[in-house]
Length: 399
Image (cartoon, rainbow, N blue to C red):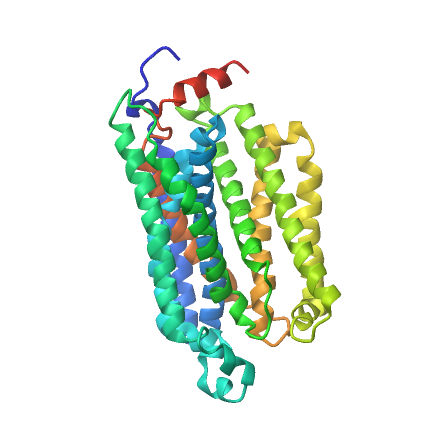
């Protein structure tokens, strides 16, 4: 790596533009179909839309969290994927726009606490009303997105400035924002998880639910990163940059998140099941009976047992032909997990699946992927003027 690195050295291939266009078309079709379905059932529209919104927002947030971790920890693994993380985090303002229909039109269709007639006959909802109310929900949501967008803006703006300053020293501002930023990130994600997901069952609560949401977001983000890396490594310029060692490093990190998420999930279940409290236990009883039980067993196998078993092997983690299918499986399982958490509450525990659950997920996902690829295309795929990049490329080139 003796030649001078420039932004032109790592421009995104033309295939990114083609993929972006396809994603936009698929997303538009999915959203049009879902909006058409809303004329038949606006309640179902918002129920399907919320699951899709929470999933894709979680992917963006997971990438933002990993970006701040990378700025604090350093390491070649993070330099190689920094642009992917930045591009994903920059979709957060888009998710704010997609949050507005939920905030200003969908609350009564989604949340019991947003229906005055229900609250009037429920003493517990009346006690929780100072927090669970439409004004507070909307104000907090705007605040979450403002904070996440500000952190993303600062980190990506300074990174872009770094691209224009060859030979610049390490910018300490990244760490100064990422340190306290991770604390704020953890708090805001926890409150967002409570607002958007846990309050669907307003009588139920879990002190570990925020950790569960963050762990799932991080896992989905890593799966996205590995899948993107594998696609970029097929063509120049990244075919000569992404190596088995990089996939092995990220495969180990994904393996750690698989165990972490399983630990959080089992801990929540064990604490609630052993406590046997009437206000907590029904949440699990509903999801462990009938067809929901089948999905729960599928999650145990597909979200933990299978990926855990496969990722034990170093050969599996460093081979794109094996690690990418595992990453894709985990992205699917994340969607199934969110559906398992949220959908039973809509129909009082009865199993229900609607075609809009698919079209909303595809529609929101298509727009998200198109925005993500747009931001990925707009920057060099590596931070060419980071003072540690040349060392990272040289060290990995020796493997």
